[in-house]
Structures are given as C-alpha cells and as structure tokens.
Amino acid sequence: MKKIIYLFLLVGIIQCFGQSVNAQQMRDLFNKSNPSVVVINTLEKKIPKVAQTGLVSLPGLGSGVIISSDGKVLTAAHVVQAADAVSIEFIDGKLVAAHVIASYPLADVAMLQMDSVPTGIVPAKLGDSDKIEVGDDIFIIGAPYGLSHSLTVGHISGKHASNEAVGGLTKIELFQTDAAINQGNSGGPMFNMAGEVGGIVSRIVSRSGGFEGLGFAVTSNVARKLLFDNKSFWTGIDSYLLSDELARIFNLPQSAGLLVLRAAENSPASDLRLRAGTVRANVGGEELIVGGDIILEVAGITVVEDWNRLATIQTALGKLQPGEKYSVKILRGGQLVELSAYMRGK
Image 1 (spheres, rainbow, N blue to C red):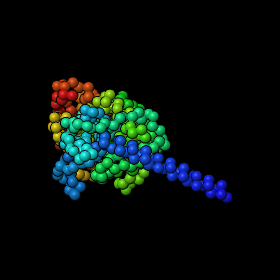
Image 2 (image 1 turned 90 degrees about the horizontal axis):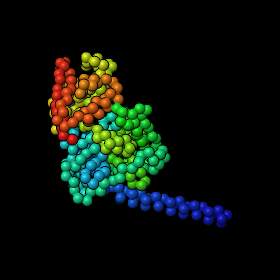
Image 3 (image 1 turned 60 degrees about the vertical axis):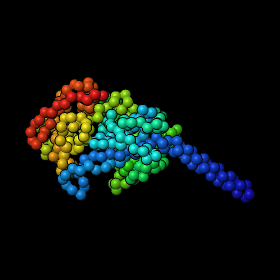
Image 4 (image 1 turned 180 degrees about the vertical axis):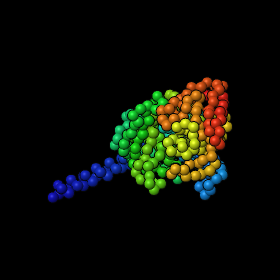
C-alpha cells in the first residue's frame, strides 16, 4: 500500500515539474518573441453600418510581425489592402508610418515597409512551415479586440493546400489551429516552439462572429514565395468577383467582372482614378457595396471566373516596368470606359 502511495506521489511530482517547465518555456518564448510583434493601425474609407450610403474615414486594426532589420513587416492583406493610411505601433507605444510594398489578396498576405526605422527593432525569424506538422504546439501573439500583445496557445489542427499553383506561383497552403483568434489578431504571427514565424494569421470560421475553435493562418513558406521571391503587386483595390447570376444582375457584357468595393488613396487604383462603391446593398443574397466601377479587363487580360486568371492579372502587373503604360477596361454607369496609368517606380 505504501509503495502505491509513493508511486502516486512520484507521478504527481513529475507532472507538476513538467507543467512548471512548460510554463517557464512558454514565458521565455513569449518574452523573446513579443518585441517583434506590432499593432497595425489603418484609416480607410468605409460606409458606416448605421448608414446605407456615404463614405467616411474609419480606423481599422490588425497585427503584424517585423521580419527584417530594414523595417519590413508581414501582415494579412485584408488588413491593409484598401487602407488610405497605415501606421505601425511598437511594444513601447511608438508609432511609425508605413506603406504597402507587396500584397496577395488571394492568399491574404501582405508586406509593409516602415517609412522610418527606429533603432533597436527586433525582427523575428521566418521559419520553414514544411517542418510544422499537425499536432505541433504553436502560439500566437496579436491584438484581439485591441488588447495588444495578447498570447494564445494551441496546436496545429490541420494543414490544407490547394491542388494547383495559383497563377503559376505557388500552392496556397493554410494551417488550421485551435489557438484562439479574434478580431485584431489578423496579420499577426503564428510561432512554432523555436520562436520562428510559421504562419500569418488570416481569419476564423465562425457562426457567432467570435472564435469557435477554427482559426487559419497562411504558411510562412507561401508568404515567403509570394512576398519576397515574387514581390506580388499591390493594387490598392478591394473587389468582389461578379459572376453567374450577379453578372446578369449587374448587366455585364461578359461572364464576370470585379466590382470595386474600396480603393486606397495614393495607390495604383487612385492613379487609374477608379471609383469605389458608395451604397451598401443586398444583391442576390450577397451584402455588397455597390455604385463603384466594375473591372472587365486589365492589361489586355479579360476577367473571368477563374482564380488562376485573376492571379495571372496580378502577376502581369507585377512584371510591368516603371513608367510603362497599362490600361484597364471598366463598366461605369452602364458605359464601357477605358482608363490608363503609368506604372510606378518599384
């Protein structure tokens, strides 16, 4: 009987010791990784939910991670894609203006460049997501509901990849996680237990609007290929693909088009003088911002209901040289219009 009691005591001591080590390890990892995490503040023209029409500048919030000593930051594309202004807030509260230098909305990843780089910034290391497997421990640092530098811990619950390379670039790959993700976490880093960035938080699947155990992050290798290796072109446009019944409702002269929901100031969209939507409406069961231009063709490539074709358009724009002219065909007020602009310096 005494042997059994001693055995239970020994097991309890071992379990407590293991929990203490894990807690200490997580504390150390958090303290080491936290300085590389930043809050992304944006200003963007939107229609307030209390009103059906009328654009106003509203603040937005997201998270990001510093990944180079020269001031580059990774975040989610949907956080900054149509933002008129972006600022980065550091752990000490310091604010620095930034601008988008690469974005790939189809994969929901973007890269920012700080306009000025403070001394002593702490970049995180971009890890190899191919080495992260289902069941691995991970942790996320971000700003859920504005509570900056909040820690959540969990596991990799799944690994999902598209069957084909989008636009000939790379397969889109996502990590599924049970670590809590909420509004404000978007764009923040998912760290592995070596303190390396294994993914960029994208979004959740939820019926209630809050976290229900299904969160997703774009893998670090996808972000590396799209933003570093290929430097995906930032358009400054938030759009919605109209096809099938919606294409007929909007009376498109072709099978599909991109409805411009929002367009960022001082972006390629503004160079083209594209007009964004001004009225919130429910069309065919879809909540849309209507009244804006509908893009039919970009740089000679027709918009169709094919994500690979849309990715090809973005790739083609990225290959244009500074000063090179390109055109966009749109439907504006029922009339076909052709707009043109010159590629900005890269």
